[in-house]
Each structure stands twice: as C-alpha cells, then as structure tokens.
Length: 195
Image 1 (spheres, rainbow, N blue to C red):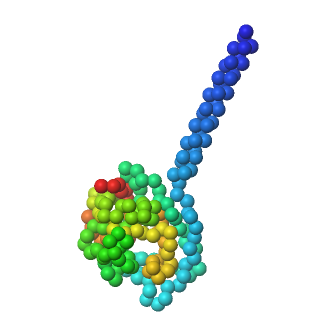
Image 2 (cartoon, rainbow, N blue to C red):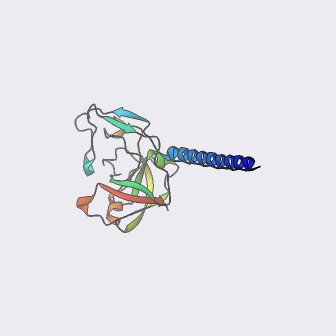
Image 3 (spheres, rainbow, N blue to C red):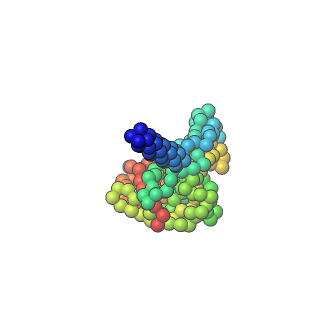
C-alpha cells in the first residue's frame, strides 16, 4: 500500500512539473511572438546631387551600407515606448511628398505625426489622434503619414534610410508643445497612446 501511495505522489509531481513546463513554453512562445524582428535589409544608394533633403538633420543613405527593414512595430500598450523624431510635412520639407493619409501637405505649426509601418497599420490610424508624452508634458497629434520601415534609400523616400520600427515622426508643433528646447530637437524617448 505504501508503495502505491509513493507512486501516486510521484505521478502527481510529474503531472504538476509537466504542467509547469507547458505553461513556461506557452508563455515563452507568446513573448517571442511579441518581438518584432527585422524582415530584411535594403542597401544604401548614393543620392543624386541635391536629392536628399537634410532639413531637420535628416540622414541620407550611405552607399553600400545595409539598413534593416521591418514590417512590424513593437506591441501597442497604454503607454507604448517610442522614439520621437523631427519631420517637416510641408511642401519641400524633408518629409518628401505629400502625406499618405490625405495626399496633402501639413503646416509645421500643426501637431501631426507619421508612425512606423507596423503602427501605421496600412492606414488604419489615418486622421486618428494619439497622445504623446515626454518631458513632463503631453500633446495630442493627428496621424497623417507613414514613416516607412519597409523601404528606403530611393527616390520615393527622398534617399533617406528606412525608419526604425518604433518611430513617431513629429512636426515642429509637437516638439514645441512638449517644451523641448530647440537645440534638443531631433530625437527623444517618449510614450504614446491612442487618444
């Protein structure tokens, strides 16, 4: 009888241990699925003279350099971490052509943004507002464009590299509203959420 009880306890322990292993593997695969990995690379091309607009300290592609591309962005939470960059959405600005959402240009004095490809989500956020928080302040801005994470270094992208997968590319109005000193414009860790 005692041998049977020991065996029953061992079976219970084994079943419990197997359950823990299955739970761990399930959670690990969910965490792994939430990561956004590069989907490829694009090779930099030398921009033709005068073809890469460096307004707002924008980078131009470097010939031969390999740039990561992404079809995804990190998961969206109530306070999604992102990197704020500076962009001009005006005609002739470093944003290139008109905005994807409405085929229009927007004043630098209007709080508008472009989101990395995964967050832009095929335009599903077009004309929706997001709340951007940093520097102890918040501002509401409208999504008007995609910051393309899948392509770059060509004429369509003003010979600029692909965006990273965690970018909120913002007009000057957003930077002003966040109270960031003009000397510090260009890159800032932020959080954002749907407004």
